[in-house]
Length: 199
Image 1: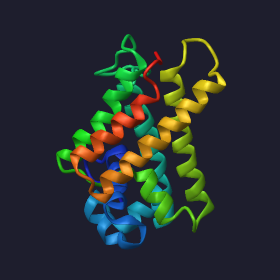
Image 2: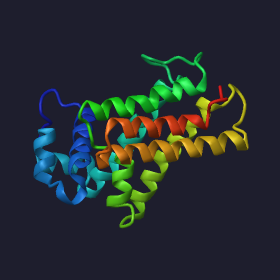
Image 3: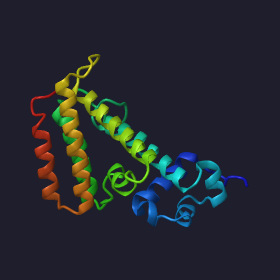
């Protein structure tokens, strides 16, 4: 069967990711994915494999885009808003603040990595590995934002990056749980206090 006119693989995968992100694995049916993408079941299977394959590709898609988007806000990736001349604290404030701003605007889905880790990682080693890969990519991005150009991350920077990743993922869980703006901003302040002298 021919693909629909105007079919874009990245757009279809984005729609699959969004469907799983909203509903989780078990509650998202193939019919939901068909409706989200505009593709029929046969086309979806041919392009992405079975439902589990679609889920894994959705996690990989989120991983690639999340680390890149974070890198832009942290000034380590080219893009709108990239600025590597700011101190590290200011760049992390921009990233963490964006999470809160999105939540205040009404997006309470939280982090897809966190959702996947709770929902399916304990059931499937492939899902666990995909989520871990994505979180490691985020940690590496944080290390890069804290580090000095051309130098390998020191043990101190690696530790700070790991702590910031923990705080970042925790903030996203708080968003999903429904914490109010004041609590979210207080959590951001606590997380940033650990890098007050960095950058």
